[in-house]
Length: 600
Image 1 (spheres, rainbow, N blue to C red):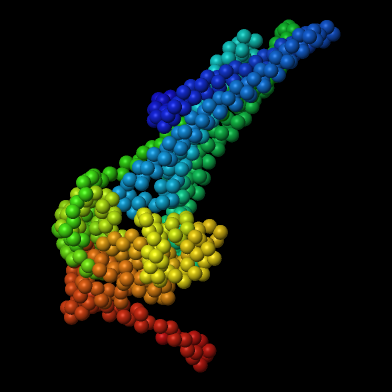
Image 2 (tube, rainbow, N blue to C red; image 1 turned 135 degrees about the horizontal axis):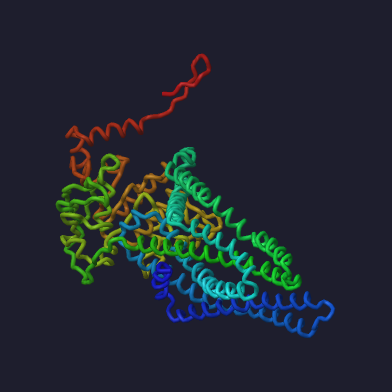
């Protein structure tokens, strides 16, 4: 009950003016429960009258009872409908409020939040959390009111009609209550939490797997290439199996015992008749108890589902709160006058949460305005982290990142974002028209500027082959773009934005050879005259940059232009030679005398 009150206390603020509908719903639900019990009492009266004097039935009284039973049944349904209408209006307001406020908070999150939380996980927590609370408020909470009122009335009737049969009817009810208490134990609640954790993990991994299908198809891999997704399915299967086994025996016993009232009532009725009680009275009472005993099963199931859904709703809200507890960043409101758009890292130190080793370790370098600097090195060396720190995905632990001589922590969020364009290897296109994707985030763009960005990004042939051109909606009616095509549209977006600082992170990673050539041309045009920090594994793309930084374990191992680094005969030269060997490697199929194929 304490958890339920805490949950309601957290949800009521989202109801706004409709919070008054919640107590109205509870009152109407309790009234409906009373109206639904009245027909059983009236049927008992009718049965008793018919059995006590079958030859002298008062038809008018029986007819009155029948009409009253019908009216109370209809009234119970109507009042319950009104209760659900009230609870649904309040629940819809809470559901919309949770989604709206949740998304507003998520939209204000630092960029690092989205780097650490998969979109599938965010979607599941927000949408399912709101949906779960809706179900709880709209259905389980009104049922709770009926589940409180009905047992009080029914227990009173059990002993008012015939206390002996009432006690017999209570036997399976007590056994069922004990069984239900066992099923709703702390162990069961812990299992339930682990079950939803595994479901959340599988949902997030499935989204990532679906996004990786182009890679699977390209390289002919199977699902086992995505071990995290596969193992999340296995863990979910094991959790469902264990969860089912936990409830198997107690649920079977509960179902049997709650349907066994007749097993206790029949012997007692025979005993009472044998001891001299009037047959018609015993028979009427027996029919009454036989009719109302299933109501306890329904009430107990509603109570059990209510407790279960309180826990589920509590966990859903906890997950949403946990998601939104991501550390916020402080942003200044006053616009800064930047002297230029140079980029400087000054003795920067940064570690990811939970990591004992710094991802960036006392790093210092400077990119002049209009200069292009490339970061190269082995995977995991810290290149992507450096690029993201330049855009303030996270705040550094020590040192400073400066834009135009000003610490980026002192630059207002909008001014910083207006100053930087991103083109990362994982391109994000929205489900909308190509035009909307290209001009996103930039107002007042002329058609000439859009066309210029399309031409410079080498995207013209993409637009021309689509029947609706720029108005083609991506992600609907089977219209999808390849990875390289998406990159070119993202480049067009960056060109329209025309920010003075460009961050490029493996922008050609998923492009085929033809698209790579076109993207390289687009990148050259995009970075012309801009302060550019780029990450590349394909070393041919960094030959002509102003400076190359070789990153190793979050530090700069070597620095210089392409020719200078080759002359140093160090890490970069080794990387260059290995890269040249990889692009010179080819398959030359020849047949030997036995008809077998040999490769060179």
